[in-house]
Length: 424
Image: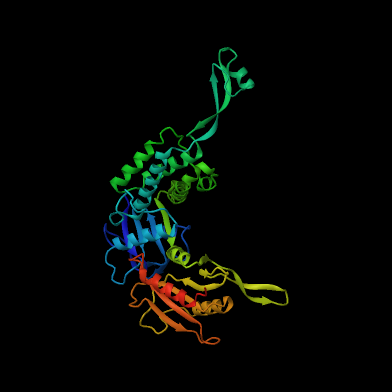
């Protein structure tokens, strides 16, 4: 069983020649395995002198007998991993990136197990729920010797197989069957995770679900085959399950292991997750105010190149709120970065300030915001007046605490910011 080493973002992990069980360190052998994983993002971690630091990616990386569980740094005084793990799982659920840890779930407690067990448990719950409504059935072609004609008679096969048995008829017909690619994908994914679950309760969940697919052919499928399954209207209820299947097959299947090492990764880009979570938090508020939330847009161009008569430098804000007339009333960018409260610029990138200023001018919006996670910042909001144009444009640097995912303070302040600039 792989030992789980829990590490927070930006926490330095020592690299030693010989690692003891339970030691907060990686051996030089583990570091070599990590370096050999070509599927990891290039900026996921940084090498130091006899150390490694993970940054901006959270999730799981298995290096054989040691699995790294990388969790977000959500507090400056974080000493336990439970709250960080709970926050990450809730962020994933709220953002809709994975259907994790749903309220009222009968699964395991997040704080007492690894992330992988959380994912596997939720997958099993989804499978159990949909199978209770009825398994996926599709028509498949069956060829069989019968005593009466069913479907159509296969003359060539009849002559080959039944020349001496006139009472038999070699027929081909369509039959509604559970042995189809949807159930084959689920069985294969359950088979894969049955070897990865560590918690006894999770192992039990997997085996219970796997037993429901005994009658389904054991087929090895590629993640691309699962991803391209075309679902009809009645089968769309299996879409979340198949997303899990594709994820597990892509990241955990034996073919993705390097040599004899049990190697896999399941990582989330925290910049993308933070933005998706923030959108999910703000969207209901925007709807109440009659506004439309748009991500990565609306897209406009900053400049026009006259000699070739072409627009250049496309702009696409992370988050925009538009009124019913289609006017942009707020532009916000999400930044997964810790602010430096004791520095007069707060550690805000000059490039980010320039970018938001350009957004405000191009989209004619006076409400601009940069939103960061709150880790060690004592304040929720910092106000900047931009010395551009008539000086009426302001930029708000906002922070939101991830431990309180409802964060009413953030929403109240964004609501006030919108009301002050919202033209009815």
